[in-house]
Image 1 (cartoon, one colour):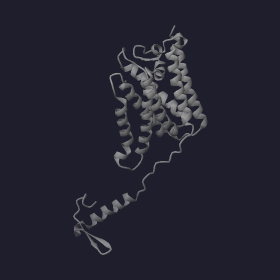
Image 2: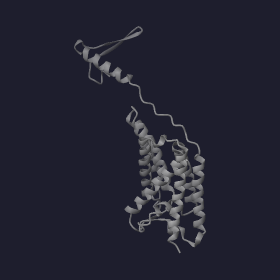
Image 3: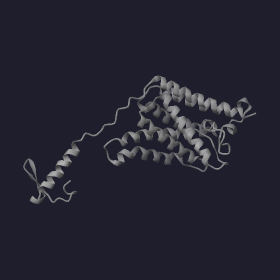
Amino acid sequence: MLEARGIEHEAEQDQSSWILSVPAGMRHRAYEELSRYAVERGVRRAVPDLVQPHSGAAIGVFLYVLILLSTAYCAGNAAFGADWLSLGSLDAGARGEWWRAVTALTLHLDQEHLLGNVLFGAVAGSAVSRLLGPGVAWASILGAAALANYAEILITPITHRAVGASTAVFAALGLLSGMAWRQRLTLRERLWYRWAPLIAGICLLTLLGAGSAHVDVLGHALGFLFGLGVGWIFVRTGVSNNREPRLQVIAGLGAVLLVCAAWVFALRQGP
């Protein structure tokens, strides 16, 4: 520390102790610097609060998988005589049809696309559910992903089309990153430690969110950004500490009803 402050010094070991010598004219400054350093080191560092995991994560994952598989079955069999892919896909040319921001999350182009989002979504959604509870977690994921989809509708050319739950998957990733990032910002730790959750999330987004020309990179990025913001706000406002069971039921039921309502609006546009 003295070397960093430009104070000339010499340290010598004398049997069981160390002797620190400084020029007589620097004695008071060296003592002051050492005293300030001792005070700073004596301040206790804040320790992150231990998070008690919520139960019921499997319930949310089950409903998520059920909705995706049910939609895939209905779309594949043209249920109700409707073209589900055409009526529910994200379509930048139909900006007045808000429900597409939700219905597009439940549609997939093929089995590989569906399976990938089922697996990754189950893992990410389960992690968020353990932190927020299944109802709040999936309602937040759905809300962040729907907002991301609607933003994509507004900023892309009218020829743009997209489907898939991957936007929701990256919204869940953003939620995890945002919550951990906001929590660590309050700690007296090194800069890299406090910003590590955000950096890790961006790295995963870059690694998993890009691909071929058919990958909706913009949707993935927007999903992550909206999820990041929601997670940051939840920790900042204390929502993540709410363990009221009734809130989980209301939020989860609201998410399911929103998906159902969106499809009712979509199917009414068909023949």
